[in-house]
Length: 99
Image 1: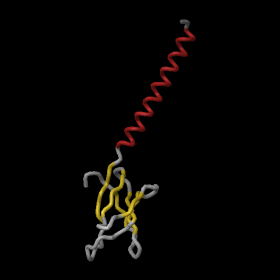
Image 2: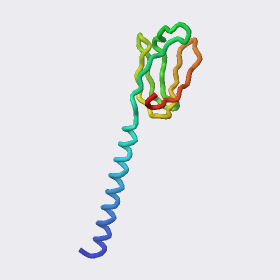
Image 3: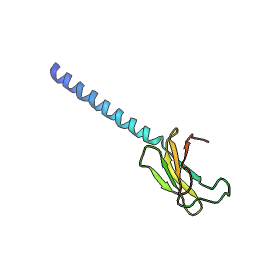
Image 4: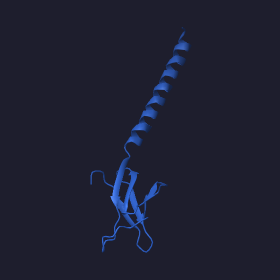
């Protein structure tokens, strides 16, 4: 091999290493998402709020509560979860992992 082929081979190896690093980094970022479960109830009566909307602010990630007011959604630590229900003020809660 001559030096030009060595340089080209080295460039290809560097690009491949960079690409693999980027792909692994993206997978690690996605793996940080946590499944959040909870129950939405009326603060005064304790009754479950059925079909309340729960979503991550600034995204299209969302869900609705079931007939017990329960929900499950995927979020990252620091995300703002918003809860909306007809006749109630929208509530925002910062998701903190482990709380």
